[in-house]
Length: 447
Image (cartoon, rainbow, N blue to C red; front, side):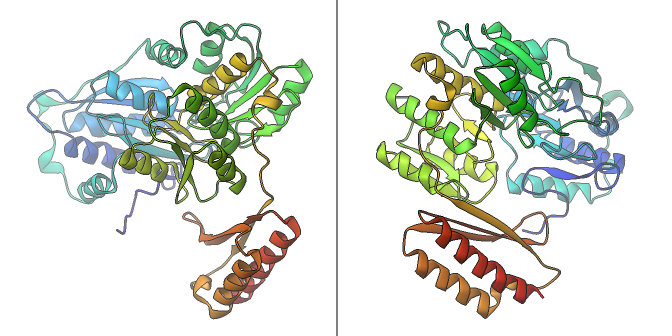
């Protein structure tokens, strides 16, 4: 299906370049028309992160929705999972998040959620695109039927209470010194408050957004500042969220980063012990480490792999009845609680295990030894280098050399003209050799 506007996670691009007021207006009108499904006042909720361009996009979206007769409730800065949760909780017909997630400030995006709190299907996104390319003048609301817009107070408290209730009432984080890095993004108020209310001693960084500093040298994609702060204040744990707080990485008391694979392994082990896994397994992507898969197997659990992207993980979870899944990057989906990745809720599940076991985070969150994993990118200008005979030969030769003691994942990027070559296995030198052979073949084919 060829799509002009929507990618794998909503619409995303340079603010005022790709994501213009005109585009946002069209999105508001088209989505508003597609989701008017009865004779009643329709309602849309809109949240955003802290990018400067959020004001511009929010205003244009409001104009679009109200022009087709939809009422708009504005949340201000709120995490993506909070918007998804509140879409359901407030009985809205549609939810929108204005964010480009972990991208720099000069990008922005629009994510849409249906009334059930889940991201829209490809079919519905295609329907919205179709309306965006129409002239909708004749379908606009009459003067008396225009929508209203207002800002809603108290939504942050509702999300904080929701996050706290994902833990047992008798569980307190008392005695834990926690550094939380909010990436100068959407969770800069709610995450420190939730942790403090649960009893933790909280040191918060990345909580001074200025419109430009979201994800800049902070957050889950740049955890060096968090690592340094954890060591400086001798904290028990560090939590790094990204700009819209749908992903998380943890830092142990020694200042070492713990990725999504280890976090999912911790939660999987805990939930298996408590009988909370809906199915005996976890859903992750093709990028998750083979060591993670072997660890799950030792627990009698399976690892189902999907293409890269949290939406594919969630689709597989919903289709096959799993309630735990995620990505190595820290998108962790706990479908008992949320309809999308929730960095804060995932972190709370890990902290619950730390409190229960009463051991250092470095021990609790190192449940398997990851296999050596090498990832290299090959940029190309045109053509399809993966179809070249010499490349196919190199891949076949590399697979034979690994002989079942490792994995290869070779895939084109979904966002840029780059082919990603990932190899992992028990023998690091062998993995490096076979990855280099494939990269060399691809480089020659691309030239």
